[in-house]
Length: 432
Image 1: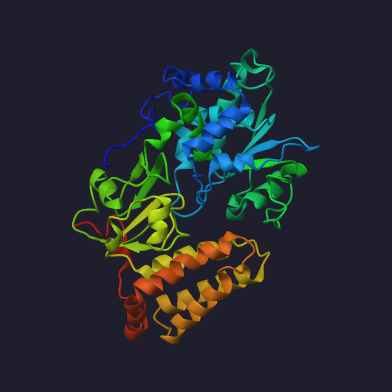
Image 2 (image 1 turned 120 degrees about the vertical axis):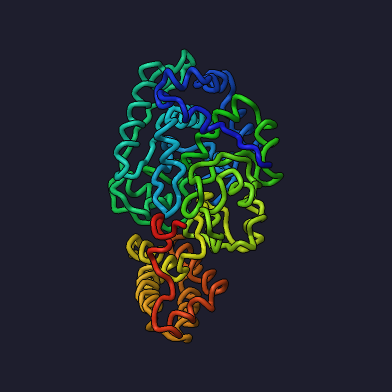
């Protein structure tokens, strides 16, 4: 299992990996030619058979989502790619689009053909201007080569692809808030039902998928569903990009089969930084319950991580050693969620605000033990009661940190302040 599977990342070391010529040299757009020779329903079935699950966090079966589109509708069908990556620690889609944008473009064309859509949108976070320009260049190159436009490669299939920039709101990573933003409205989640598959963008049947999900489609079409299921686990098939950041010797993107463990990834990444030991980590980004060194051998697939009490999410593995104050880390995450809450629902709007206020006080050593019960009670009033998953995600680090590091919370107000030196957790302060 310690073998990497460079598929999406295989050409990242090439100086021209982002160009059409560089992508075609590695076999790019072969899958598109094959796809256009198949019936759309055959491609949908192939993706279903592959077991590809959404790589944006929820892990919903991609082919099943495509199959939810109604057979008949008076409105056009749309494909929307969610490229609004912005959660703390999550950093796989942006480097993928930067280094290999054509694999996403090819995935968009094949996926649009499969769901019988003639209009696709790639919704990108507005702050990543360098990525936006690279995507726009890739789309222009693909259009010039005849891969986008009318009568693609003589198949009779037409497709237009638009790269749309958001204004930088984490809430627009929620699929219906993304649709509102794409339509020109303020990005806030919609009430469901109706679900986007029935009534999404401009009221038409809409498929919304993550960048990595769509980018995985060309390799499935080219190599077959059996090839994809030969990697990963029975219920979590295939490969994925694992993003290691924080107190690790060689942080970066590690593309490996689902089911690999953090211990194996750390072995390949040179381990925890010299002279230190693992304290806690996130298996799927800051909105997932944290793990400790006791979870080093948990297989990183959807089922195993869930059974261990967290979520695989976006495979954003943030690594923290013993120099890190867990209360301070949770405070920083909570400040992010309070800032990014859209304010539409009371539990999230008020709950994340009070998280921030209470954790600030606790981190400064001014709280008391009863505050921990108040935090847990507050979490109960957010979890499952928010309009969308932002509120639910905000509770994860708070609840899990109190469960795993209650003594550390107590130390703060027993000592009248944080027992950790923040400089020690920095690159320079933690050096031996």
